[in-house]
Amino acid sequence: MPKHALSIGQIAKRTGLAVSAIRFYEEKGLIRPGRNAAGQRRYQRADIRRLSFVMISQQLGFALADIAALLRSLPDDRPPTKADWARISRRFRADIDARIDALSALRDRLDGCIGCGCLSLKTCALYNPADRAGARGTGPRYLMGDAAPAEKISRPHRSFS
Image 1 (cartoon, rainbow, N blue to C red):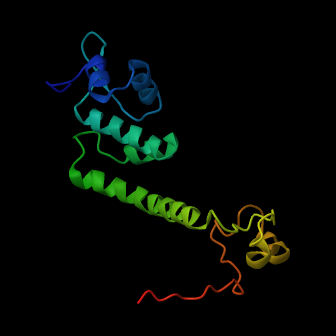
Image 2: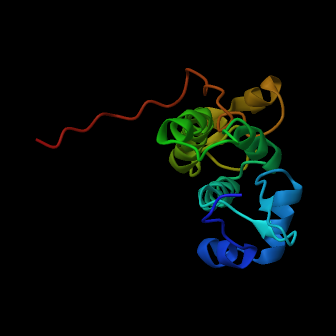
Image 3: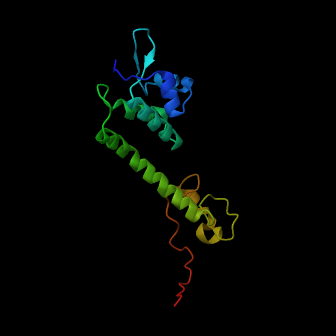
């Protein structure tokens, strides 16, 4: 047991998590505290970073199972290094980039036809005539990454010179 081990109360205070949440994360294998001679949980300072990573990852919508898998790749015998954290953060980067791209597409296309098949907007007759997007599958096809038809309206280019 490390000399500077922290109690569950100290970890709760540092992370802002309830003691019950810390115990829950322990049950899920996200952290693995040691025990002192009296059987009380004792945490390493690195567990603060692990729990912070869990909270941030959950806020980004990642599943606990995925978070746990990444945390299991961190060393048990020493605190994780900057290189350890960089390695696991790279695993999330592609997913986060894909989410950013999807949100950008949603923002940019939400006011037009999204290929959902509703055909309720005047522009749907131009962007999705006869619900052609529906042939590609269910859902908002253009927001899901399908390209809009090539015969899409071309808008005149304006010059502001």
